[in-house]
Length: 90
Image 1 (tube, rainbow, N blue to C red):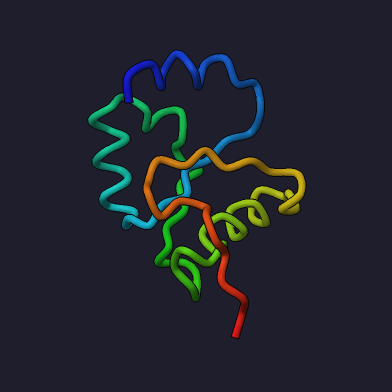
Image 2: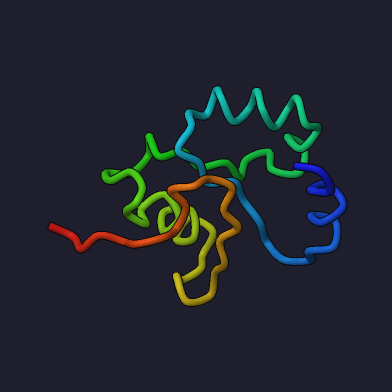
């Protein structure tokens, strides 16, 4: 995404990457974009949680690992499934 590096530099808050992709895919894409250094040790995959999107697990898991509750976090989404409708837990 054009301007993402500059935008990230303006954010002075703890950040991570939480993705539906695998760790391997994230390391590849973050490496290609030059962002791996910014997120080293702070990438979380849907492979670590029980429920994939549209459930919020892929976002709640890293928040908890980083010491935050859901109401103290924000998500910047880059996919059409995104953080839209969250289905009720079964």
